[in-house]
Structures are given as structure tokens and as C-alpha cells.
Image (cartoon, rainbow, N blue to C red; front, side):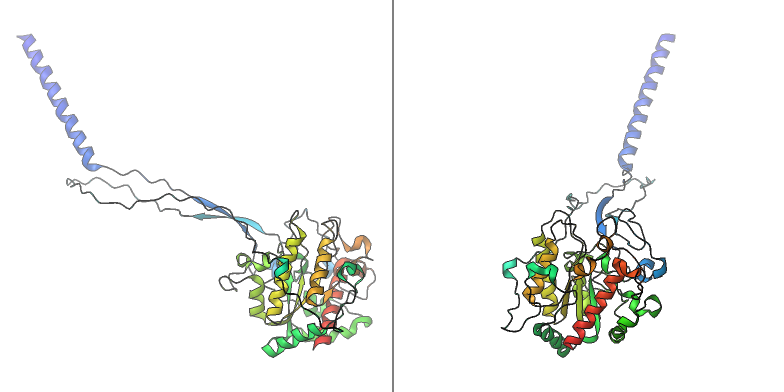
Length: 397
């Protein structure tokens, strides 16, 4: 009797366990909770060059009395604010709440879901504009007897600091005036050697320079181009080179139109009659011929807009053979445009006006009547640039 009761009890327990398990399985089938999504982030590394015109370092001009030497080791110096790198997060999905099972049984329906195709992260790209081959450039053919510099480009080291101005240069300038260019404006195109804190910006503030009796004749030119000296050019930035100014990627989005290069943006906004082009920076290991192709594009752009370009040699010789200065002289000869031979002006200076890094210029007060100050690279650069603008403007106006 007891044995049969035990068997019955065991059977009941097994039956109840089976029913409970089945109900649990059915409840889970209808609940069907979705897994919590895991946020995924793709990072695209983008080289960033600060184009913010409100940046204090770009819009303030330091007291020349407090100017100090800057070496390349101190890349965070506000006097030479090099670009930084920015990580830009893309395609970050928003987290959604996990559905809560309803007490009312759900009716399963088949809803087609869109097919998602995986995409590869973007491939890093070097933004180098397509160079113009040398044979397709259109150098100016000078008429017989009409020329600027008489020495060939191979003898550029003997060219004068202040250029000889040709009739071709006058034609470009006068065509620009007829087109509506402002005779009281010039633009700068360049790298860190052209930022307004050190280059030409002082001439819009009489307290920061002294001409002295020998250079008082330059006052008229300073007044003529008032506002251009200290202006924040769209085509000047630390880290720029001959390729950067042709590349829309590096244009200031706050001021420039979509697809517009920095140099095109500057020409449109400022409407200059003269454009001084001084490009010292070049990527180590890249051929000088490529530099030449880009420089020719810059010159041809300026001439196509009837803006008179003034080219410049550089004080340094980082490439080791002065090939960039030779190439600049060749381009100036081909287009018969003025060349400011700053290299020649820097040669008599201690260490040729360069810091120990062989690239940056030695700083000093822009007091052109001070012999000690004029033993430094920056005051000589500013004085000779002013003299060049003065000579060119007076020859073409």
C-alpha cells in the first residue's frame, strides 16, 4: 500500500515539472527580448591646421621688444602655432532601451528588415593637387628689348635684393586695375615665415617699428597699403606649402566657399592688385621639380586674375643644393615677374640670419635705424619686403 502511494506521488511530481517547463519555454518564445546594442565608433584621423580667425595667437601681434628666439623643438610656442591632429567620431548609433515583455500575448509577424551592407573605413588620403607638368606651363614670351632681370636664373645669387620691374609686370598690374582690383591692397601667400605677428604686420602700428631717416621715403607706401600689412590672409598659415594653398581641404570654412582653395579665397575676398608669394616650407624627400609645378600653378592663377605676383627666394638651404631658390628664379624669369631676392639680403648677417635649426629667422626689433637689430633675420626680412613692395608699386602704378 505504502509502495503504491509512493509511486503515485513520484508520477505527480514528474508531471508537474513537465508542465512548468513547457510554460516557461512558451513565455520566453513570446517575450523574445532584443539584445542591448553595443555602441560602435569609427575614428577618422584628419590632419588639422587651425583656420580659426579668432585664435588669439593668430590675431595678436607681440611686442617686438619681447621677441625671443624660437626653435623647432618648441613646437607648441604661440609664436609658431603648428597644426594638431583631431580624431573625428563618425556613425555613432544612439543606444535604445530593451523592450519589456507585455502581459498580453504578442502575435508574431514577419516584418522584412533592410539589408545592411558593411562598409570599410575610409582610406587615409594625401591631399596633393594634381601638378601641372612643366611642358604644359605657359611662360611669358618677352618681346625683344623688354625685360626685367638681365642675368639668367642660373646666376640668381647675383640678382639684386630689390627687383627690376619689367613692362610685362606693368601690363599685369594695369589690367588688374582695369578689372577692378584695389590699388591699395596686396595679399600674402606663404607659410610660418609670413604670419603677420612677425612679417609686415608691424607696419599698421607705428609704435612697433622705426624707419629712421634713411628709410623715411617708405612712409608713403606704408600709408598706401594700410590695412594689408596686418591683415590675416586666407593664404598664409603655419605649415602651408605650395601644395596646401592650392588645396580646398585647407581653406578656412568660415570664409571660403565650398571647393575654393586658400589662394582663390584670398583673391576673391581681398581683391588685391599685388600678391607677394614666399614659400620656404617643403616636404623633405619630395623632388624640387614637384615644388616647381605647384609654384607655377600659383603664379598662373595670380596672372589669370590679373594680380601681379612677386616671388621670393628663401634664406635657408635645407635641401642642401639651393635648388629651390634656383627654381624660383627660373619661374620668375619664365613669367617675367618681380623676384625679391631675400637670400642675398640674408647672406651678410650672422649665420645668414638663421637660428641654430637652419630654418627659422633670428628675431629682433623692427628698428631699422638700430645697427644691432639689423644684424637679425626678421628685421632685414621686413625692411627688404617693404622696399620691394615700394619699388614694384611705384614702377607699375
